[in-house]
Figure 1 (tube, rainbow, N blue to C red):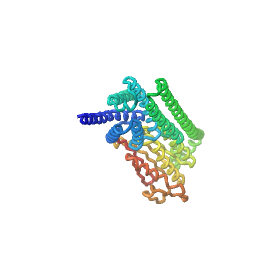
Figure 2 (figure 1 turned 90 degrees about the horizontal axis):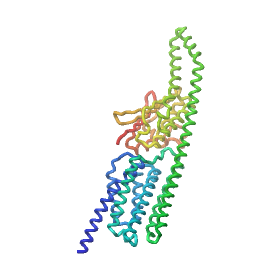
Figure 3 (figure 1 turned 135 degrees about the vertical axis):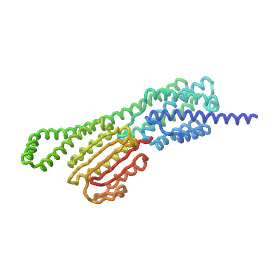
Figure 4 (figure 1 turned 30 degrees about the horizontal axis):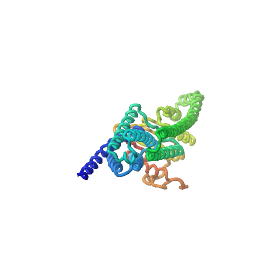
Length: 444
């Protein structure tokens, strides 16, 4: 009879554990997605996998080991399945760990004191204790999610920060997470021998350490953001100065231009008049591009800085760049880092081809196609009339340059990025101009 009761208790424990795990994992994913500012995604398969895995580990493993497996699994899922950057997911997981470590330390201490439990092992063997801890965790997670949602709290780690800053964030978040976990394990193992004041002091110091390390990381991010802003302003000032000089020169020569028009009109040389008119219109069109180079229009600092620098580079070769922008860069379904790599390669190739032509022109268009739920990035450039196998251009090592060392990797890498993102397409055509069209679909 006792054996049957024990088996029934185990079955009840397993069912309750699975049920509570489903609830806690649902809330934990909601919290992490809010912190990471991720939109709602179809997470059913991964969510069920997490629930089953964590239910099993909670039943058969010590709470300390189960916690480590849960954290590592969570990081891998968000990095591999949701393609969240390493620094972001580690920073978010650090927040998750500190909140629930402190919650567990306090709730376990309260339970053991109220119920006069002699050791942690005795508490873990109690169904009342497990139910108490789990319900407490659910309530805390629910409260945190409500607060995060209400105040719209999320972390903002720009993708365009330097590799050094990313490395620093990864190192600090990893070390902090490890210290928090092992501190919790150690303090719980010695819980009955540590005075309450020391136990409380440990929790306070744990929170203080986290706040200090997080504050330092946020300061690093702010410094990085400020540096990028300064670089953008310097590049923008150089471009504006260049355009201002051209406007002043055009204004200064306006009288001479009118006299030139008058000469063609007086001699009724309409062909010459047409040619001169086209030249003036061409220069005015170049000046009109100033309007497109606006931070409010190119509303992504990384893309703005990249296009601005490529514009200045093209001007060194007297290449005319025509820019049209009709999209919101922050709504594109592509990582800024990957978009910068693709744009950098395509524009560099366009400059390389156009600089050797008599007519040096590059057209860059950012267009929205609502009917097909996509955004288009079109880069056209003049090029010399030699045959290129468009299919071979994406192969590793293909290059039109004589010195092929370190060349022939750009389009190959672009093709690798396209292949790993299901919503990206790249089409290459050639007619009067060489054309690359990147299609970014906004599939949910």
